[in-house]
Image 1 (cartoon, rainbow, N blue to C red):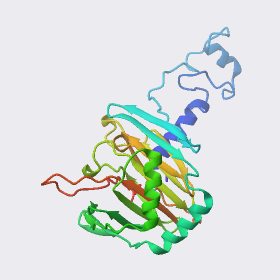
Image 2: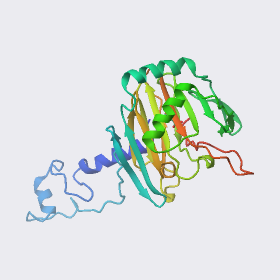
Image 3: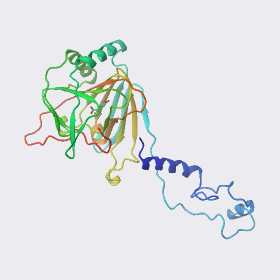
Image 4: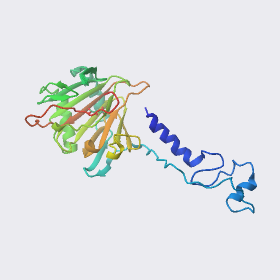
Length: 300
Ligand SMILES: O=C(O)CCC(=O)C(=O)O
């Protein structure tokens, strides 16, 4: 849901163009000719009439600058999208709807739904335990720790996942040694704002995300510049609809410069499985297993 501040900024942005704060006077633009009851006075103040009255319709510069909240962009067609270029490099998304043909995706979805060892992970935030609002399972030679709880190593890949990993590796030109599977049971399951930026993923990781089941909205928001002090009100936003059989690749600086989420929805949604292939590197000696995800406000 839009924060109050963001909502207010939107309202201000559109009002600034159309409606003056003070009747008869639009800051920084032309006077509203409908407002004054006395037409003579109005024309006089802009130099078109003969008599200028001293008080009405003097031009005032606006005292505050109103900033527009950038319009959210939508990505829905297959393609490569360079979403930003910053000091950390280029951030790129590759969207491949229909990567898996419909029948194959149907079959894979129904098998994975019943055959994967789904469970609900307990995480910790400021010493408080909470259950993730989705089910997960982990495949990889190495354990995976985030939000102060660990998914143990699991080298027993389901045979179907081995096959799909090979297909994803072929199209992406990358190799992946790990897989985090997410099961969103309905529209109330979600994952909050985060970046997949933990040290074990290395610099500029490619994350390959395959969606099966019901369509969900995958949102991205740009990291704000330091002067915004962590305020996301005016950052760029992108939404991508991830439908059955779609593959999304996040590449380059995407995990440095953007966050992503799958928000809760308040209308009916069926189950959705998301397979996120990653490469985990052994963590250097002495590294404190850290936060996979930097959540900011929303519950993961
Ligand atoms: O379900 C998705 O599409 C996103 C999953 C995700 O962000 C993650 O596993 O880090």
